[in-house]
Amino acid sequence: MTLKPLAFTLLAAAVLTACGTTSLKKDNKANTDPIVFTEPDLTPPFYALNPFNYDQPPVFELELQKAAVQPVAKMEVTDPSNPQNKMILDTNKLIIPTVNNKNRAMKYAVLAGNNEIDITSIDDFLQMVEGKARHYPPQFTDRQERKGFENRLKEVSSQLDTLAAKDNASFDVLIRAFKASVMGRNLDLGPAYTTKSLTYAQRILKINKDDGEANLWFGFSLSEGGGQRESVVYLERAMKAGVQEAYLSTANNYIGMEQKKNAIQTLKNYKVKYPQESEVADRLITEIEKKQRYNVWQVLKTPAK
Image (cartoon, rainbow, N blue to C red; front, top):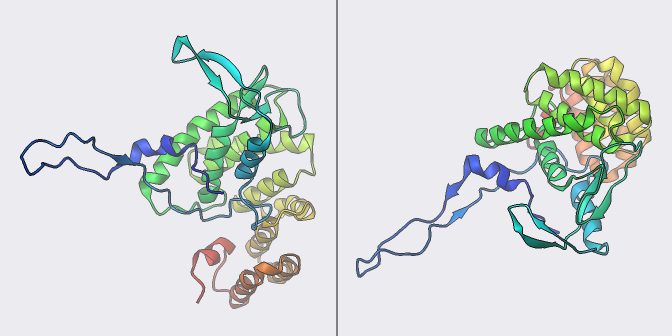
């Protein structure tokens, strides 16, 4: 299923491209057809959009599919742009609790209730940023696109920070605030993002030390920030939880620690568990043995010969 990103329009303002122009008719009368603008296509993601399973669609799109098949409780509400009018809400959104919940608790409804937030547009945007900036260094080929992502990420991170500032902030809010802060660090938006990411990781793992996603993100963010030895335990937990990308992050971490044998063994284990990734694993093993490159993501960025 192809889904147009909801956050597309937030980036388009910076990079709108005119695809139509005003022309004159043969009788010299001005053409009254409107000028047509199209949003520029986003460049393809570099990092897999579903780190849990590379063969699956992004988690956000899977959630949208679930929302679409759930019964819809239509609701008539006041139009926020015109209080004198009413509008009908008839599409399920992704709703999470903001407080007092230590587990993931996504639900599907047309409107968020008390102590809830419609997280649909935020999740859509975070997914797009992940494709470019989940790991360091971020992978952008278009400077305007990167600037648009950076500006929007600052807004989203600030919004999540406000929700996460509460002592009883929900797990769902904390994990998103954590991911946004990691990617803000990767995009060099300032040292505050590094501090926030560490704080959020500690709060999240205090709630659930075995959460696969939290351990993956904390593990590779520590590793890519220079804390390779400290990251081992978290990456091991992520692999144990069945997170596919944890194997690549672990191999990358061992490369950083100059533990070549451990890196190669991790990739061999990766081949066994994910045989469809054998070509990638063999390529990485070859590069490690040659000592030509020091970073898994750098190897994957270079086209295979």
